[in-house]
Image (cartoon, rainbow, N blue to C red; front, side, top):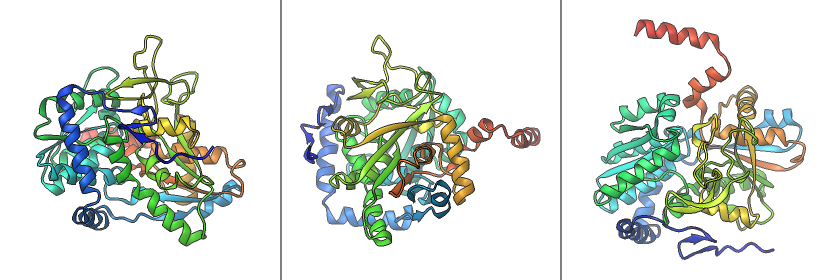
Length: 409
């Protein structure tokens, strides 16, 4: 069946998406949608965005031939899109810059955001400092503790970090807190959503700003190989980095796409793989797949990577799953940890735990990908995960170092 490129209608991606929000927020969403529709084609805005991407963010990011990993796996020819080379160390800043410029155009003086892994919060705080905007980041207490280095840098940049102690104290609860704040402050505040989800037009806006990843890959792989890749692979939480890579290739039906979800401790245990047992529902203002319990309440999720530890998935990805344009798989915590070690020792690259899920998939399925040209989106670098990694890998020297530092402190 031929892929239908015109699947966005009535603020929905197929049957998913929409904007299920309090009536008072509808005019604000209309304002954002109308402003974005005009700005995205405005030459002055496009020039300003391009200059910030080049001189502040550090784009274009490299597309590296992973020669050692390719040789080691004896299967596909592997390229790595290194989004960790951006300012702040992850792809999140691509969208943060674009939305902050949009907010400034709308006359907003305050930015709020939610964050799990901390990379979106760090990117938002960074851009707000650059553009002179007030900033508040909502973060679940669990994520606040396991991503403490990013919290430190957010506060250093002048952002207020608000700890959310409701529910599971993770990303979904941070989203709830941010939505509640926005409903009360929308006249002066822009909610800078970090992933390709939430009420329309946010999924569209985030996807568009992140699509610079795939556009660059398209040019870079043609320059290096003279052809398009056979397979694209990206980790999939809400969808910002995966859609950023995939979207510019959706019309190229010969290019396969693999989204890798968080398998946690196992699909039969605790995980965050929405397409492995999730159900369609309307949660946090949009319709999509969500992990739910028997009563229809949001189920408890788990992933060693805070950025993938979320019960929902973006509506555009839900549609692309249903029409079988993207194939969704999963990698477990243990597989992601092994992938971090493998990529570090093979290529001298330490990926974020989120990105390691995509690497893990390619390692595990190297034989089935034999002779293919594969691009993996390494959406961030792993220095933010040092406390998680050292604990998971049982590094005794690190424990001694922390003990000594506490005594000196």
